[in-house]
Each structure stands twice: as structure tokens, then as C-alpha cells.
Image (cartoon, rainbow, N blue to C red):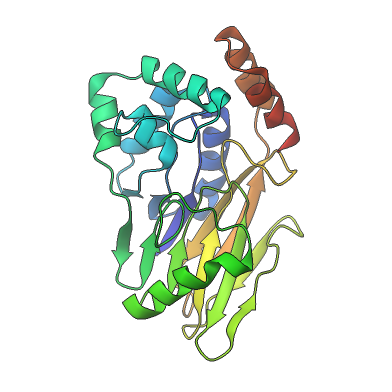
Length: 253
């Protein structure tokens, strides 16, 4: 089975369409979305309708999704994120917010794989350094989860863990155009595909992963694809989104 793994689309239609088109060459059997379909960008309705109608979608709820779906208030959000969230909410119909509100916090497409937004133990945790991954790996070890896919940081990354050796690798997957991570079936992995709609690693191209579960124990490839950034920015300007959200798309930060 081949899976398109995405996260943090953030209402960026142009970025999402570029990723969707690029992924078709690999003919993915399923799409796994790690949350934050909404927030920040100008097209929550178009992104939501396209994603929710995918025939084999598995998706979890992100923190921006919770606010846009009116599940919770934007506690801890900066003022720019709050403005964007309410812009998104104004664009969505009741059935769209209801669908968003019904998404799970975590999901296991199979017993040894977990989908989450922040981390396996906290939907709002930012897994930014190797040091903070220990509780997540301990949880995975106890639950028999070999691979946890997460988002939230907008940074492509992976961490590898062995019960005998501890954390044994945390390389940057984006040192080249793409990077293949071979899963060995013995170790435990935390993998972030990066952000489709608002990358923050200095590369403005939309990020995604392809997971091949047919190749031995599995292989994950990291990918980037350019998209029409200016088209998205023009929409945001017309709708008076904060300048900081508009400008950051061009620099990937």
C-alpha cells in the first residue's frame, strides 16, 4: 500500500493542489492527513471539501481545526493566528465545521502506526528537539506503535529510537531534494512530513511524504514541490489577512 502523508495544509489551496498533483505519479492508495487543514490561509472551504471527499482519507484534528470548528477558543494563539482562524470560520458552512469538529485527536490506521498532530502523548506538543521525544517513544514502546506520524511544527523531520540504544538518529531529511527513510521493523520512528501550506524551514516549497508499506518493512520518502505562492498571497491581501502571514509564505519561515 502507498500512502500520501500530509500535514498543516492551512487553507492554502495552491499548495495543496500542487502536492496532490505531484503525488499522483505514485498513485497513492490512501491519504493520511495529520491535522490543521484550516487556519492561516484564504481557502478553508475549497481545501476542506476536496480533502473530506477523498475516498480513502484518514485524518486527525489539529489545534487550528479545533478553533475553526468552534471546539475550543483560541487560547495561546497569537493575534495574527486568531484573525486568520475567524476569517476561516466565516467562510465555512455549518456542515463543514461539523465535519471538522468530528475528527479524532489520534488515529491508528493499523495497530503499529499512529497518526497525531502534536505528539503521541499531547496534541499541542511541539516535537522540535531530540530531547523532548522521550515520552513519545516510551508511549509508543508500551503501545506497540512502531511508527508515529506527526505535524504541528511545520518542519520536516524524523527521529529514530531503539529500546536498547535510545535515540540513535535525528537527521535533517531535507538536506537534498528528497530523502528516503527505510523502516527496519525493529526500531521506533517519529516522522513529520513538514507543512503543505506554511513551511517554516526556510524552503517555501510545499512539503509532503510518501509512505510505501509494500517495500519490506516500509519506506518513507520526503518531497518538496513548488506552487503558485503569489496567487495565494493575492487572495490573502484582498481579504486583509495580516501581512506577516502573507509575507512568510515566500520565505518559508
